[in-house]
Image (cartoon, rainbow, N blue to C red; front, side):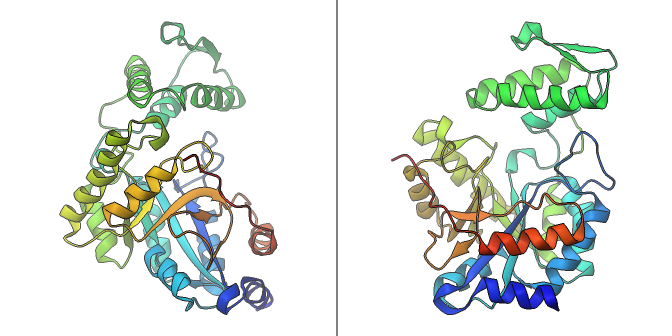
Length: 323
């Protein structure tokens, strides 16, 4: 009750109301040393337990609409997932149902039923390396140590950093070639199938769009960026048979990954609201196409609760987009 009362006080009401949007990606069934930022099923369970006890939990579409209209309940929150990983359906969904917590899943449609995102090509290549080093000189990426878990984690971080802002097609091709050279399967089973997505929708979860191939929009010509946005939405609507009105920007940093023109594309495509990965809390004055989110890094219940309270109390920075 202490945390609930404190969060309600900090979240405000009326014209001062605040919306907290939690962001997740993968929820492995057990802790994964190579994915230190992803909570295990056990950790996600107590996180959802805390959120459901102390917040009014809504889908992203409902919460952003009520924020805009000034009818948001005190201490409201959303639970969101980006990309469309299979463990969202197999691990996270049963936990969400256990606590009666709706969530929104932003899906990059080209990976449904198979395929692997470029970053997972890199992570899994390093994971499955059986030698003391990973030689990527033919890709212009040098030689990387892989003897210990610490070395593998650092190698993953270095490679992701090196590839992240390369041109979209080059990044995908290079990562896929590295995966192929590492002997990885072409059907890794990391992402949800169309049936999994339908199951979530039938179970009361919201499905949102996340483009088709998950490019950094800023890196694409405008025509290609718009096609990515429109295609991802159309494919999900074709699957679900209903409008998809929520969107999340791939990568999602407003300073590096999008421009004002992309907000106009999102609105033109028929989305009602869009999520970034900027750290922050949404208010009634927040642009509905620039909703910030909150990454729950803490791995103990009390620190997690304190972080939630501090994030509501912290001053919010205004997003800065290129024209």
